[in-house]
Amino acid sequence: MGFEKQTEEIREICGRLFSEGKADAIFAHTSGGLDGTLIPFIAKGEGDIGKIVWGDRIRQNLAPYLHGRTDRVGIVAMPCDARAIVQYINESQLARENVYIIGVDCPGMVDEDGYDRPGCAECTVRVAPVCDERVQGDPAGQEGASTGATPPRNGEGAPPAEKFARFRAEIDKCILCYSCRQACYGCYCKTCFIERDMPDWQPVELDAGTKMTFHLGRAMHLAGRCVECGACEAACASGVNVRYLIQEVTDFVDEMYGFRTGMDIGTAQAMVAYGPDDREPGFLGEAQYE
Ligand code: SF4
Ligand code: SF4
Ligand code: SF4
Image 1 (cartoon, rainbow, N blue to C red):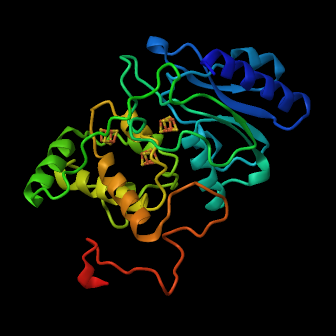
Image 2 (cartoon, rainbow, N blue to C red; image 1 turned 90 degrees about the horizontal axis):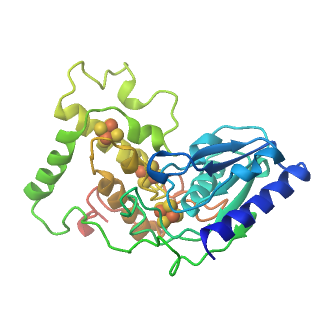
C-alpha cells in the first residue's frame, strides 16, 4: 500500500473518530515543511481532515505532544510513537482511555537527501505493537523504505582509549542546546537534572565534563525507557551522535532482562521491578559480579 492509500485510510478513520465524538483533537502530520518534510498538525474537527498527510518525510515524533494530556485525543502514530505512548501509559503519564492510537505501518523515514533518519535504518519494530486501529503498509517494498544498514556502534572489543576518543570527538561538537532532550518523549522532568542548582550540575563554563555529565546522565535516565526512535539525533543541529550510548544501555537491558520498551501495556518495567531470579551484573556486566 502506497502513501496515498495510507493517507486516504487515515483520513477515513479520523473522520469517523470526529463524527462519533471519540476525539476532541487528532495529532498527525501535514505537508508544508522545508524540502518536502511533513510537519506536526493538530486536526480539531472534520474540516481539518483533508490536511492530514502520511509519508516517509516525517522528522518529528508526535508522542511528546500527548504527555500529561487529560482530554480525549487521537494520534496518527508511527510504531515508535506508539511505543512511546505505551510507555507514557505504563509510567502513569497518560490514561489509556484518553488516547485513540491509529498505528501506521512504517517503511522507515528518510531525510531531505533520501538518507535514513537516525534510528530508522536499524529499527525492527515497523508495526505498532499496540494500537486501536492499524493502517497497513508494505514496509519491505514501499517507496522510501530504509536500507536496513546498521550504523557503527561504539566498537565492541575496541580498546577503552579508542571508545573514549570516539565519545570525546562527539562531545566536542555539542553546544548543550538540549534539543535532543526536548525531542525525546522520555525526557519530561519539569527541571532536568543538569539544570538543577542543588547540587549545581552545570557550571557557568560549558566544559567537556559538563557535556559528558549531561549525556551520560541522560543515557542512564533512558535505561529501559528508550523506544529507539532516533528523534534526539535527528534534532541535533551540531551533528552529535551519542545515541549509541543510549542504544548500548537499551541492548543491555534487553539482554539481561528480556525487556524492550513500549511493547505492551502493564508489563513490569525493567528498572522498577525486581525478581529473585534477576541477574545482578556489575556496572559493566562482568560475570564475576553476578
Ligand atoms: S524508528 Fe522505526 S517506527 Fe520510528 S520512524 Fe523509524 S522506522 Fe519508523
Ligand atoms: S547533542 Fe546536539 S541537540 Fe543535544 S545538547 Fe548537544 S548540541 Fe544540543
Ligand atoms: S533517547 Fe533518542 S532514540 Fe531514545 S526515545 Fe529518546 S529520542 Fe528516541
